[in-house]
Length: 238
Image (tube, rainbow, N blue to C red):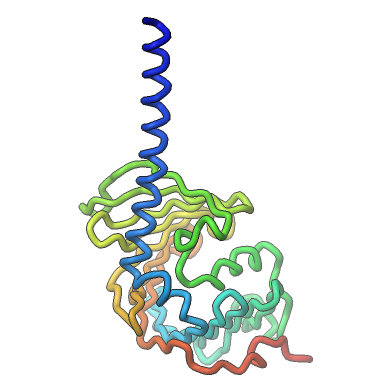
């Protein structure tokens, strides 16, 4: 009798573990489908996004040019001064105006900043194709965020970075992520998803951390698969 009880207990544990793993995959699969499906996602090679950044009462134009998985260039204009950040071929460089502690000349990006910026090469997040990327995803539970039911997933990258992802239980789109940014805990709220060539992108991103406060990115235009001159990713020679 004791043997039968032990067998049933082990079987129940295995079934429970299997259901849990399947639940994670079901959530991720529905998330991918909500974005537009893996085929349409993989068909996107380049993205050029024009945004406006609202911070401390200022409106700052921002342009991001991305070759998915390979290179990204961010450009902003702050009070007439150009600010550039580029990641390509696992290296990074940037231009910071003197008002932001720079020289106005191209300089190498610090290693810790480069490590953070590498994630921007993937515009669809760590849940999409998480197994192929070597990420681990766990279901923490079902919670309420901003009065909405969400699935709380904990994603761990191969490098050990932990990101808390909150997936809307109705739309299966990500509403919030929490992670360590520049050594401090920060979070990003995603909203106002709109479809471009069959794939949904958040048009509003509110980024907040103790150091920077809150910044709001509003998307004005997204161009998909337009030609990109890869010369823009090369560090200018002084």
